[in-house]
Length: 245
Image 1 (tube, one colour):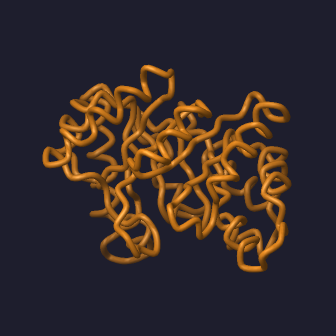
Image 2 (image 1 turned 90 degrees about the vertical axis):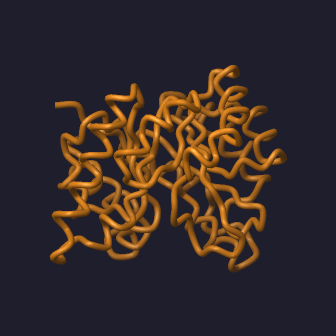
């Protein structure tokens, strides 16, 4: 059975650093800890308000991985703002995950609306792919929309797993889990690879083992919350174990 790879989102390490106004925790050290524990990649999500990972962090992170962890992937999540995309184009990460952003939102909480936003996404996806950057689009778990995501030219979708995670342990768990699986099946049928992310943790990952097409999960909030109890290395190892590594 194919095992999904783990990309550790280090945004919350940057948020903690920013709250003090200095350089601790050091972002590159956090990356080292995650990679030493076995994480397959690192995710960063710069926002224009720079409340966690800053624009100036991006070349530092890209260089650090290239020099010290050349076998690990860099995934930059971002909105389709020209200034951010220019940085992505220049850095050439392994993957760019395009996420719709609503000003003032606490975190990303919805996928792209298709077909309404199809014309907006096509000219963004194409230059990324021309530069050899794998492109993924944040998507709600709606099986009927997967074929439209394929029309953008993207390589993958990232299933937004918030509702699935929040339903864990409730009577709604079975229904939300079914939506994730049906969406993955539809994505694969449309020729798309599958990523997943949002509030995934060492417990609810069990329901995604063997998910059709699942190539990668990105996890940040749950990882650092667990790290407060057991440390970064152990928290990453728990996630990898939940994925079957």
